[in-house]
Image (cartoon, rainbow, N blue to C red; front, side, top):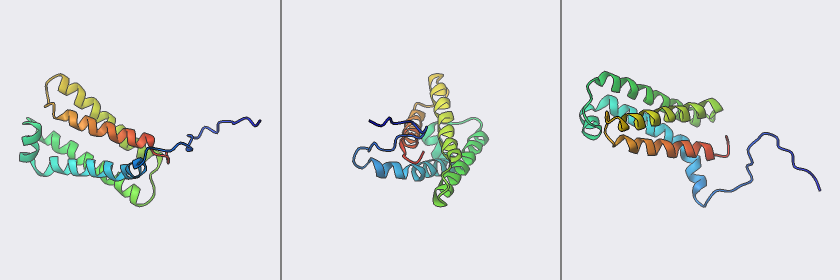
Length: 137
């Protein structure tokens, strides 16, 4: 009997639930759209953004974070279009989502931001899980 040695590469022999492959292939698009559209929303429509998330004292900071998220989303999308989803791009996506999750959870717990931010947390958790489950990692 031959021994199976690990190459350090993930085992790609497992299959996902039906329909999961399409979802996983869409993760870069979903993440790019989520960050780009969410970021632009914060920058371009203060009235609507605050109607959903609550009033903000320092809206310049909201615009700064929104602008940064839009750029990160655009980079993820462009990398996907060009077929250059490198490990660094994946980690940029997951790392940015992780930071947003931490901020959402801490500041909702401190009652500094609306609990609606926990919806952002759920979306970011799903995106991170999608990246982790993709076979091309």
